[in-house]
Image 1: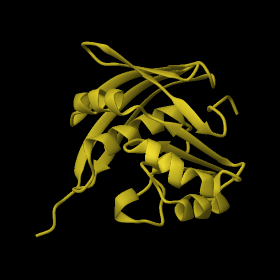
Image 2 (image 1 turned 60 degrees about the vertical axis):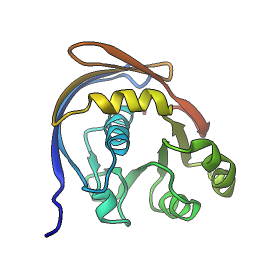
Image 3 (image 1 turned 30 degrees about the horizontal axis):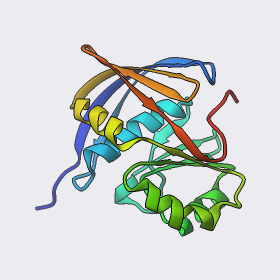
Image 4 (image 1 turned 180 degrees about the horizontal axis):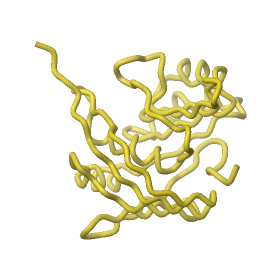
Length: 183
């Protein structure tokens, strides 16, 4: 018997002063049986970082031809491809050809990935790479439960994530490209 995905009901109050985005959104995201808490938290944070009304979760681990998240226009054309984790250079290059914008939200063994993989696509001007610090991400992932309500404020490359009990801060590093900004 195959394991089923676990649904997470997420509610985010997004205040992105860098891009001028102020939205309250609710969505359900499926956690694939082989997906770690860190990857799921990274996808949720990427959703807040790049929020757009047409932003949606791809099938991710279930379909390697889809992004973790993507923004499509009303004609179905991909406008922004967003991956999380440590994708190989071939995947980044292929995605950068499929969309005008491509972003990678890196977590995990990022330093080694930076040395080995990033140079292979550093020439691409439509690719942005952001890093979520491991310790802070682990703390936030531990707070993610099946029904989560977070306030996410983004200002000057800082993510302030608050729940009912505390506020946590993540400082984004931009390794390639530029920080998200107003369209």
